[in-house]
Image (cartoon, rainbow, N blue to C red; front, side, top):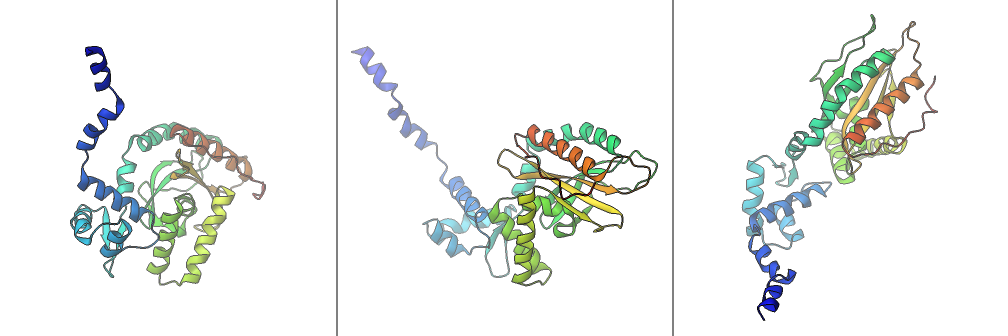
Length: 279
């Protein structure tokens, strides 16, 4: 009889009430709100949040204000709430990102030496990109990119690549924010969306003469296990007479470096079609 009693106590169903007792309702409300806002292209008011979570306004009011005070959500002029970039900042301090940067430096240095070009890693910060790592061109002729440089997302190849490989809801939300911030209309926002969709389909971005004449920017995403760009690997390819590495070859080597870095954080970067690049 004692044996039977012991066996009954060990059954899985008997453990369920214990697990339920350790739930944190306030924390779960906060997580529900963050997950809801992350899935929206536009902000939500308190009443909309409450309605979509099937809760009362009173239930979500204090939680939303706490999230706002801690910087996880921001309030717009119409009293709607959107996610801030704080969760991204936390993710940037997470081990996979640190491992990425630690692994990147020797790879970037070797690549810059082989192709005699500058190679940079950038991340997205709100409506801007920030350069977080630079491997300088070892050749006697070149130009300099400074660590910490910030540029508007749509003004750089790296920014457009980073945006193209973000989750769809976040991507479209940020595109519309960028269009509104520059007083551009929905038509322009739709053009932005089409542009990043084309980059996503192609797998990389390349543009000539955007920053300086004679330079073609080539940029690939560094993808995590969910296919989200944690960073962009970019080469501002400088055309000069003594460089024996042609554009297409440099672009292929840049891809191989981006693919290796993606593998470091559990991602996979498919081989793109580079036939559109001139040799």
